[in-house]
Length: 466
Image (cartoon, rainbow, N blue to C red; front, side):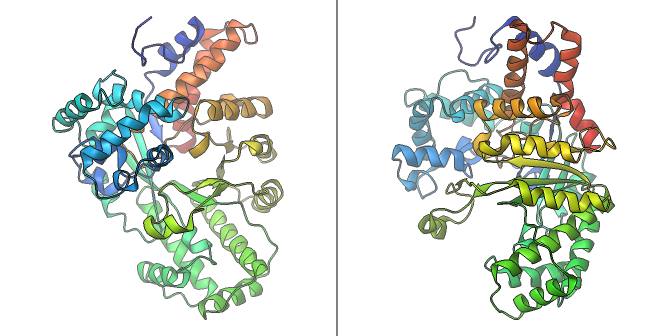
C-alpha cells in the first residue's frame, strides 16, 4: 500500500472494487453534461496566472469553509493578494477533514499537478511555487486542463439572451473536446423576481420580438430555443425550488402577464399559475426539439440578506430547502405525458429526505420508449460527497435500475473540478465491490464491469447523443 494519501486504490476497499475501477471505469472518457464553466475562457484558451485564479476564485464551497474557520472576508473574496488567499485556503484545508473538500483538494492537486503532499500551512509555500511553475508551462491553459482529465464533452449553461458567440468560435476550432451548452430560462419563468420586466425587455430585443403579451413571450422563447438548437444545444436546465403546478386557463395567464408588465403586484396564486403555464410551454417545446430537460430542485438560496447585498448570488449563502416535492412534480410530469410531450428528463434532488420520492417518481414515467427516459440525477451541491452519492445510488438501486443511470457531472464553475468524476467512479466501484465480497452480488465481473462502464460513460453517450 502506498504511503500517499491519494494512491491507486484510494477509496477502493477490496480486490473486486479495485478490478472494477481499474479495468472498467478509470479510463472511460468524461461526458460532463452539466457545468457552469465560462465558455469565453475555453474559446480564448485562458491561461491562469496562479492557482488562486483557477482554484479558489469563484468557488463558494471553499469560501464557506474559510469563513467557518474565521478567515476574514478580505482573504476570501476581498482585496488580499492571490497568494495570501491561497495561504489562507491552505491553512483551512486540514480543518476540512470529513468534508468532501479534503478529498477533492488532494485529488485535484494529484491529477492536475502531480502533487501528493498534503496541503497545509507547512506545505503551502512549496505547493504555491510548484503550481505556479506548472500553470505557466504548456498544457495548463483551459483547454489543456480539460484534455488532462480525458474530457470528451463538456456542456456549459447559458441564459436565453446569450449570443453563443464563444460556442460558435469553439465549433469552428480544432479543439478535440466537444463544448456544448444548456438552455437556462429561469429568469423568464420566475415572474416574481426583482428585475423581471427589465429582463423580458432584453429578451425581446435579443429575439427580435417585442414582448407585449404572453404569446409574444412564448414566441421569443421559442425563437431562442431554435437558435440554441441550431448551435448544437441538446439540453436545457432549470434551477427551481420546486416544480410549480397550478391549474390555469389561457385567458388567466395572459391577464397575469399583462398585469406584471404594467407594474402591478401579483398574488401567490397568480405567480404559480404563470410559472406553471410557461414551464409547460417550454417543456412541450423541448420535446418538439428532442432535447433533454433537467430540473435541479430543492435549494434554499440567498439566506444571508446582508451578505447577498454585498457579494450577490452564488457566493456561499445557500442551503438545503425542505419544500414539498412529490405532488406538484407528479402533476407536471403527468400533464406532459398525457399529451405525449414528455421529453427525456433528469431530476436532481438536494434534500436527501426526498431521495426515495425522486427514485420512485421516475418509474412512473419510464414508458419503455427510451432506456432510462426519466432519470434520478446524481447527488449534487451539498450531496456531492461520499455519503450523498452513496445514498443516491442506493435509493436508485432499490427503487429503479441503477444499470440505466447516466452517471456523474461536475455542476461546477472550476476547471479543476473534473476529478469529481473519478471520485464518483471510485465510490460506485467500491459499493459494488463490497457487495460482491459479501456475497450480495455474484462474482460476475464481466457483467458488473459492463454496468460500471455504462454508468461511467456509455449510458450518457447513448442518452445525450452528442
